[in-house]
Image (tube, rainbow, N blue to C red; front, side):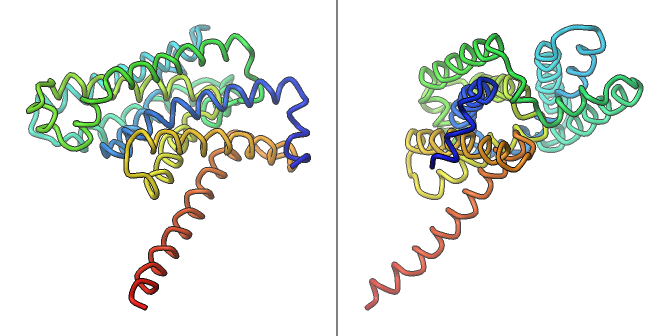
Length: 279
């Protein structure tokens, strides 16, 4: 235990830990809705679809986060436009925008020889290079995400059952679905700085999926996912420090490993309980 705590005497790892935990908390809440509502595909698409926005912003000398917000907005707006203007399903619209935005981002990046280092940070994050100003912004966004999720918990949970349930209860399903997508987009935008666009999807899905194996209530899922996410950030950073590994990838690998360990444990328990009951 001492060896896992020792690295966090360094200020840059302390900042990385705080930033990672903030991302884990936001991802736990939003990711619970992603898992329950079945929005994993659009979560993945948003995580990749922000690439052209970030690339254009960095080429223009602006902040990458602002470009990511624009890219996420274009992604969501494009999906909405395609589904409303055609008979195509939502998954088809998401797939088209996903491929198109990702391809556009690759084209933009390939046209600039100065993007090598920036592209690595965009895709895999730079949690060890985060400053206190970035952490303050993450804290504000995390609090906003938690607050919005708490205020609109009932319509969100009804949406996770089905859109008709929300409509019967007097909520406009399309409005709250759009708000849920906006929360996912904001979480992706804030998180990419820490773990990158390729890995943020893992933080959105892995801890809530693990929590879903044991929890039967959304609130419990969020708490368990938050704890798993925070502990995984700590363990991932400690492992990356000890073995000179990529920090963001180490965090997500720990989360995925926890999921499969929990899945194995729950499967073993489920097989033993009927056998014990029969005897």
